Length: 455
Image 1: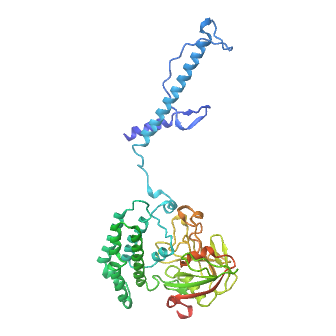
Image 2: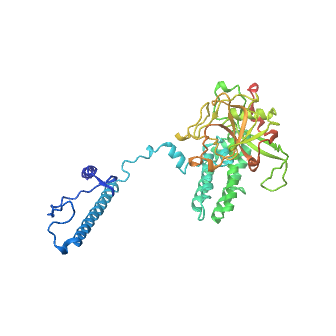
Image 3: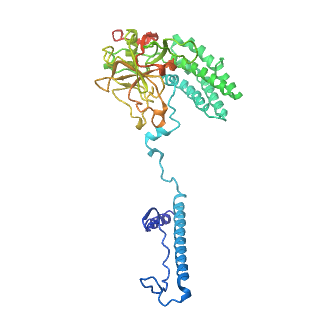
């Protein structure tokens, strides 16, 4: 059967191309050549176009009828050829439509940019939660719960049955792996971990309450319960990750480093005396505060350098300027800080890459993506793109309308992202060139900051 089909295809490929209305070969379908018709006996026609020895009643009506017959015959042949060609294509393609198709031959860029399973985090909270190097069982619980957040986005009829299955899966893991989950927490923090574990299972904002909200099919209650459960999961994971999960290269031990999380509060004042308008109500003021969570788990050197600059007061009084989709600190010529190498941790890896950008087209994505509104990153050094600026940073104002395929920023994987704005995101689009940082303070995480003379 296969050999006869192959011979049939070869024969079709050898057929002449059909001619278009202007006599040009058609590149789409082969012409189907019918067997030659027997030659007709036709009267010889002189060049003048008038029949020789024609009878008076045969003249122009007979000529018109012959032309109509020829036109009808030509159209019928062309229609039959087209139908036959379509049938051949269908017969060839339909029986074995994907016999030799290999999904692994799809370029990795297409897999990243078009696959709905990519699930790039779109909020700083989600990106920070995913970046915690925690117990595998806790990550499995987190994945099940985060799947619900995607199901909630489905309009109209939401798949509550799938959501219920995700919660039951999380409950099963939590119950069966209790010893593993609590055993991953340092002994001095285990009591706190036990309280959080009990709260996750049966607390007011725990998994059982979330399950009840799903059974009620109330999307608002589900959303609130899900956020509460995920917050508890993140707290447990942070207890399981007291420090870095990898060893820094020896040559980088001379830099400050952050071995966990820290929080910086930045107060911004207007340069022209105008006011900020908080989105949650309240009175407009000439200053506004935002909070940034620094992630030393994925960018210990970059976050450590920034935290040290904050504690030294290096950003107090620094002016800001608005650029395309970014708010930058206007201090690139200052000689504060360390010239830290570009530091990016690829997703699925256990340690950062240094002096190397990621190639998103090849499927490389960072643990801390830039494609999140309020991402905080260091600018490049003025001397080399392999290093970050010693002190100039920027808030990235992600805009999907200006992003590439898959919603990824065109600069994804090119900068050292080290944190996210978690409080005061509504202030970022209001910042104008000339506004300035009146103060920047490290309000949490000073115990995670290790300075070179302390190591």
